[in-house]
View 1 (cartoon, rainbow, N blue to C red):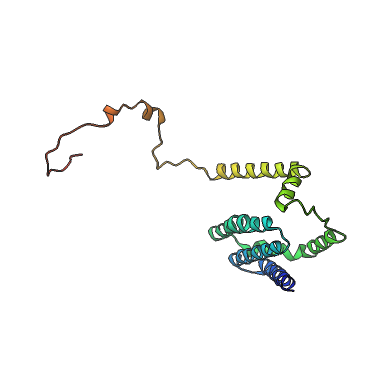
View 2 (view 1 turned 90 degrees about the horizontal axis):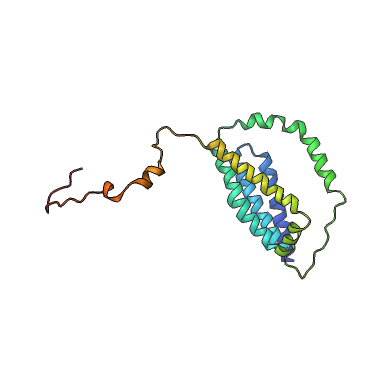
Length: 187
């Protein structure tokens, strides 16, 4: 009875916070609603005995992706009103596609002897190997692209010359001076 009540509570909060993520006018509020949806989806995963997925939701999505979204939204000055102008034009098409994809779908029960993380590993290593590797390749290309786009040569910084540092001798770099006690050092 308590699990059923917790399920309905988590499911209601996920649906409500998902709707508020889309309907919120302030992008920072949208990201905060998204974080709430991720936490409650993790609660649903715990109820389904999928603790590994729950921890992935909390660590990866809340800890990294949602916080990154929050920083990007706060740092960039994007006109979100202009971006939302075309949403209602395609809302009916999106809703019909979302409803059509859910009809007739069944979930096959997994082997009770294999833990959830093991079953995920077996699926990723067999059936979804190329998709998993492709996603890794896409993330690698995105990371390299982000580095290339943000890497700018700086003119206000003196460049490091490693060959000069390697050729430098210790006796050229320092000098021993015997100063009397109580006097300062001349530079």
